[in-house]
Image 1 (spheres, rainbow, N blue to C red):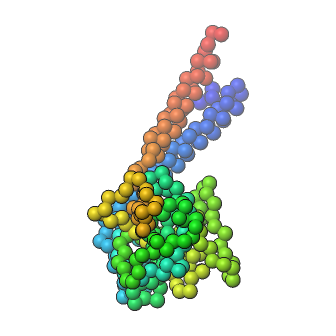
Image 2: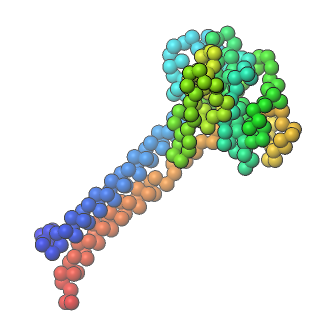
Image 3: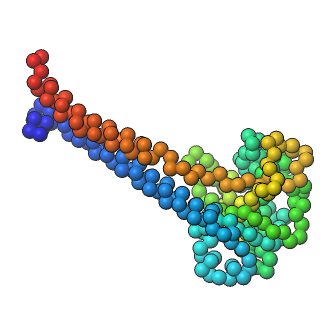
Length: 264
């Protein structure tokens, strides 16, 4: 230790110690990311494995349930009501089997309740999305039962993505959205929306097509949420940073010792 902090090696030792601190902190940061990932996975699996929530008018009168909806993402849900196709919007930049298009988000007036819930009914082709004429995808008239999973509103875009220019009061409503921003969409509707939306589940008895035939589509194609429940590479990355720190801890004193005792 005395040699490492001698005049000859002092500056390099300080640099090595700083590098060690960085490497160790990187290792613990990856372990923290791993813990966060495991917490997320456990929370999602706990919701996925719960029994379907029947989102009825009576259930929504329970203040405790209403407050917990934001903590139930990915829980199966069943809701009955009537679609309001006049206020549906399009969610842009959504792909289906490598086909570009978007999703239709349609308010469902919950039977017996003053509020509605936004339903992600599924994918339609880009050509149909951009026309804004979605009549042939609006055949579900009258009362319907929707089965799906609870999803959270998206108010902030991911890194590298753009958000939406929210219309100011009095401006025309926005029909095409980049994010499923339920709170912002609710601002252009004449009735309240629940703070979550429901992603409609595909019919388990109808396998999804592998080729999209646009002309024959009469309803959007529902999709299951694409959620990654793996632990990623955080543990291996942590071990990597700790290994680098160990190599530096052992290797640097050996290097200094050899340099000091080298005949050259």
